[in-house]
Image (cartoon, rainbow, N blue to C red; front, top):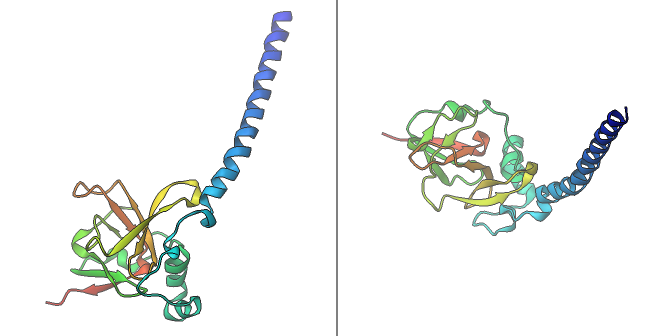
Length: 180
């Protein structure tokens, strides 16, 4: 009986310690995650100077509400909603904010993610990248190098050609078909 009480007591102590450990851990990790994901503590493309710059009011006039949300506020369009997802003609995908050519249709591939995906930008000067700590994870944000518009993210799970997957918001781009 004594042994049973001791093991029950030990079990209760262990449960109590786990609960305390859980609470203490979350008290530390929770705020740290929030601070790390806060745009106030992240170096973003918006802090850089870009060749094409407009006031917030001008951007709102130039872009559709969805384009504004993605390009200027770093929103993400719902997967499988962009017409550019099924765009397979030869041509170039450009920034919807400033018309800078970004990606060639030759580097587009079907990733199954629901967003237009490419294994490389048109050239190294087309896009820029910044560290993105939003949503409690570390990612690499991709933005237009001319206007700073948010395009999407790049991941290391692409095709063997480069190993990269530029996962772009279709609403942040336009498509210019090749002329023959």
